[in-house]
Length: 125
Image (cartoon, rainbow, N blue to C red; front, side):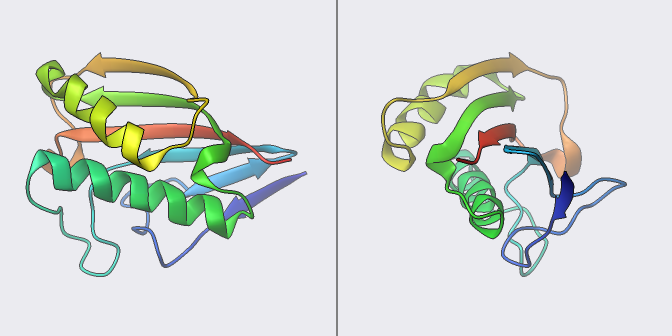
């Protein structure tokens, strides 16, 4: 079973992709940047962007009937890897233990000049 997931509580897709796709018990969430879903503008500041990214991921998870704590893998893309520790600090506030698997990469640029993008995979019991 494959089902496209969409919520108005997360930014609409800015390209040819879905916010998320539920395939059996796995929820594949497209990369989220710090866009405010109402204004479709990037929030200001790295910390605020990161918090907004997690809000967006959480909203998509909730629309699919799970929570951000059901995420089993995050792929974090940063335009400046020196922000890695700040991401860790925010994740500690947003997520419950045990934490999901994760990879982090520095990239030269992200959509809309974002500083961070996070792609996620959740497992829905």
